[in-house]
Amino acid sequence: MVRYDALYMAALAFSNTSGATQQDETTNRHVFDQQLGRIPPELNEQAGAGPAHSIASDEVADVVNQQTDLKLVVISNRVAPFDSSKPQTGGLAAALEPVVQRSGGVWVGSSENRGDGTQVPLPLVETGAGFVARLDLPSADHAGYYRGFSNSTLWPALHSLPVRMSVSEDDYECYQRTNSYIAGAINDVRDRDAFWVHDYHLLPLGARLRELGIDRPTGFFLHTPWSDPDMLERVPNHGELMKSALEYDLLGFQTNRDLNNYSACLRTHFGLETKDGVVTTERGETRLKKFPIGIDPKQFADYLAADLSPAEQEKVSSLLQNFEGSKFAIGVDRLDYTKGIDKRVEALNQLLRTDPHSISLLQIAPSSRADVEQYQKYKDGVESAINRVNAEHGTDRWSPIHYKNDSFSQAALARLYRAAHVGVVTPLRDGMNLVAKEYVAAQDPKDPGVLVLSKFAGAAEDFNENEALLVDPNRPEEIAAAISKATHMPLEERVTRWRSMMDKIESYTIHDWAADYVSELDKSRVTVPADQFHHLGLGWTNEAQMPLYQNYATALTAFNEVDPGDAALKESAYADVKSSFEALAAPLMHTQDRLWVLPAPDSFA
Image 1 (cartoon, rainbow, N blue to C red):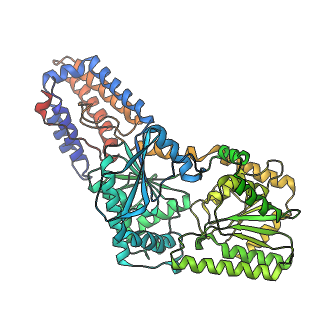
Image 2: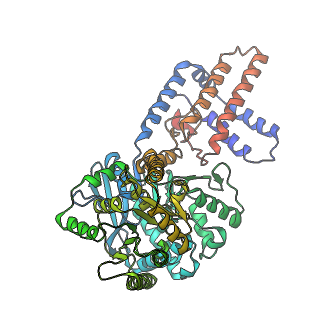
């Protein structure tokens, strides 16, 4: 077999010298000349033969064609139920369950149980062609990891609510140890094609995977907002967390605002600049990109047509009876202080003072993190405010606010959304807020309701002021004015606004979101590893670089076909080889520094 180590050494020499910005060009040429001059005659002959390049091109095509079905590992704090007997919950589960089940992927998350911290084999359970694994996270660290650092420090900080933050160094250590434990479990599937990590609970996970030697493409998607540099500085160890995040190949954000905030944090805290969506560090490159999550509008149409269980049908019918012959608005939120429910209640209070009995509010707010003291206090405050409004404005036969502190299926919510004249989505800050999109998708095209939307929800980047009524969620008077405007809006305007929003929802669904992210993550993958392609010992990261290899191969063939006695023509052909090689090598060195080390030269003999 032909030995290809000389060309590899030329590539390696080029990569080592070209990294020095002040390196003398003459030295670069000398090193390149020296290595290329060591190519044995038999390599020149083989490289000059047409079939050798044809075989390589066939290998490239085969690998590229296989990229559509990544063996993906998805990691999140919780996993989808993967239970056909339970109603589909929408959101992330709707997007990723099919990906996992059809492609042979693995979804890893925490179970409801706690363990002693002993590392055990990943508990894989088959689901379709894929697997789900639920980890019993270490009991000793769980409170600090979940209730502590994740939800009492990071959550309020990312939502720019410093007064809600509590800080503990012990919590941070629990957070890091739990991420290390999860990484150790994932090590069992280290040979999968790519890793997709979700949300703020797992920011350091990419770095922990790298420490274990996992060098497959690894991406992170943040479902929450990202705060500005001043706010982030309040987070203990924020520098270490941001460095951890740069271990990912791809960082996904919901909105341009979040992406720009992250870039500003890199610039402020590390002096790092982002160019064309890429930040370069000693590790390599991390790409930053916006991926606005959507919903499945077709599935929502199916929800409207689906039968409810007798108990849930009675529950929905009973609620709707309260609003017969009158208008009502709907709010659907977890009972979380970021959702602005208290401001919404005050808005209705102000509206009813100026326009009594004009509209009611159905507020559905299942409890969230009920074991966290701040959440319990917020729940108590919201319920007290609702009682005061009902006492001031209600009568024996009419209540302005109907409050439900429990959950509803997506099918039941779809019916309630459709019946509501106004959808009120007014979080103080939110990554996206899919309730806004679900409300729009559930409307009657001939008689749609109106969306009142916080300008600080991610959905406000998708829906402009000509579509939704955008408000400052901190100002109850603005919310009240918008609700009033919505209740009096003419049908023609309601239809125009709704149609525009619905077109956007249908043009970019949650399945498009998942496919776009996975496709972008796939660009971090070396498609031709060195053990399959020995000409250079380098791998490509995406199909777009393939023509660069063909240019180099053509120049090398031409060089070998020149009569050795024609020194001038040989020198000219050599210059073409060198320039095409440099064009090929340069972008390769700027895509994750994926320079592959070949086996010892003797193994190619």
